[in-house]
Image (tube, rainbow, N blue to C red; front, side, top):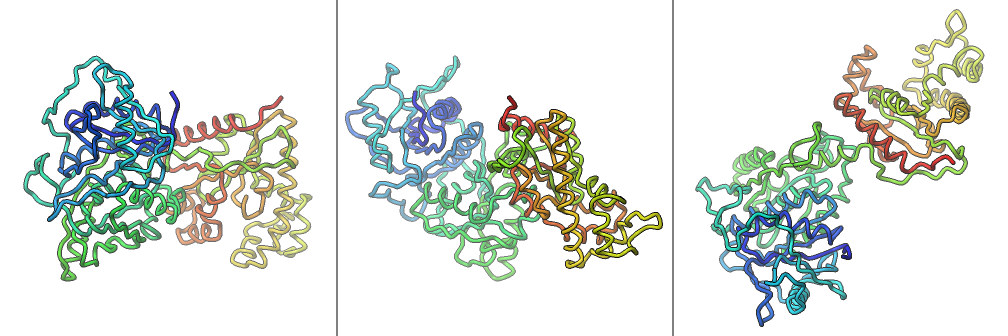
Length: 560
């Protein structure tokens, strides 16, 4: 059967009976849709009657909120799918229940196919039922003109599944502020205005649960704080975070898709309190298990400033069933960023001027990043490694190509008695002096580049197909023009300082000063094709390098 880029899944089974069926339903849908899957909840709707069914309001109860969390958790195994549960017909308890929109709701990705869990008695693709399904979908949402329809009939296995509601509640995922025990059928209270906050990097299903609950609670306005600047410094692999504007773009599209009737105020979150700590019109705050204490701190801050406390709604974390040993056991952006290590997020450079049968990698990273250890791992996998530091030593040596120009530029007082250049004395001359440093680099960088090209010739002579130039100053020297790809090794600055102090015997201040004289990890990553990290145990680094190497073998031109 054809695969569609976007689809709409209309779920008609009562929620309690639907929960055990959900996994095979999503698996069936994932075989037909490969990008965006919208989900519309209409429990109890029949597509087999004589009358055309109409969309009706679904009362938001804690059972509904738990089901939404359950669905997003189940969808997490289908990582190619961007699942979005539409909330227009789901209403929280308020003075007056919200009315359904009179016009068709536009969607960012108009569905090409409408799917349903509704089944006919004979298990066929019965045309009148499909026609009702198509009319129902197009009466609610903007769909593609040639809308297809499919009755799913998932494989539920050999076990008997209930037809009627079991009245067995799903595991509770939402904890309201009230200490009173909640009932699954208890309506959820609606509020005029509320808030939710987060980093929202690579919007994932745990984010969607948090945002969906906030959208259901809010009747008029939702303030969304998006962490930026200082609040990002403590994040794992911050160099791989999406830029603020990109995170906001994805967030905005999701929110407008799922509940366009709300007014969304998306703002940068620059401190732990944000607008939730100071906006008197806000009534609730949705938090996760991890940020619940932060929510309590917000309320203390509000009380100190004569503002009413916010009703806190705590969302339990979604478990990640496929996490690796160095990843968190919850669905998180941190794990997504870790999985990016070794991947190729941007296409390689085309370098027709480079040797045809040698693929060149430029390996760089801040001081202390573990770059050289990665180079040795690549060597173990078959790469020819060029150490630019060793080339620098050769260039400085008496009789080397840079020896005489350096002595002429800086004087004979930089020499040891035996005529060898005293690199410490030379370093003291150029450190902190941009003019003197430029004189030195103008001499050294072209010489090292020439030596590197000679080494590349040697690599080809030895029959190597991959060459790695290990160079801390690869980008500063402009050597990216000599390579097909730039690979960067990153670690937190605090870890880099610890390693430099331990390895080189420097003070923390001296180590920090060294790092500040280099391009930052973020600047390096912004110009890189592949990112690696040595932050974890050696076997984790090895696994990253092997992954990067295996992917590299698939994309490099094969030798004849």
